[in-house]
Length: 241
Image 1 (cartoon, helix red, strand yellow):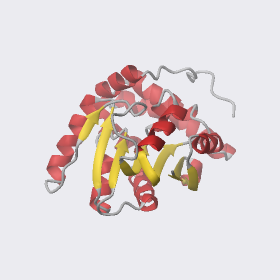
Image 2: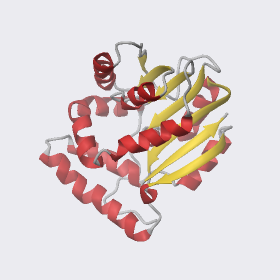
Image 3: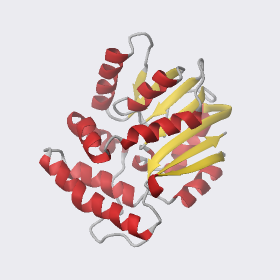
């Protein structure tokens, strides 16, 4: 796939840079996400959680937990003991505020930290999940190895991530949306244009599902199911250790 000439291919994904960027966009993040996705991301998360099949008593790591939507949806659907980790302190504060408003009956411990170097012991979790966060990892292979380490034998990881469709017309339409229409929405909503430009470029340059599947297998995971959603605009990967 040829990339538009204005797409930045070598992006700065140092954890300090990513954490700072998400700190900056926290005030507008949920509103702009709703406008730009039309709420379809909620459906994608639901499908991911259905596949992960969290059971009461499962210990679950929510990676790149952000403003907490995946964790809240998981708790509402299935229960489980959920721990969140994210680079952005401001995102975590928003997540905790949401949790306190909606889930006074359950704890939600969160940690500001790097998913490539977590403080958890080997085999600490039954399940792990990450929604739209893998493309911000500076080292995808290292990230997958770290998740593999903290999962128990037989534990499962669910990844839901945006992707560029392989159907030519749909692919070109999505690239047009990301490079032309989305910046206009961000500008009208007074969002941080440079940060959202990064987010768009990170989608366009993200490895294909075929490449990701190879990385997952190399990290020690068995891919149980890979599901294409919305004509290839999103993929869900269900993996087992």
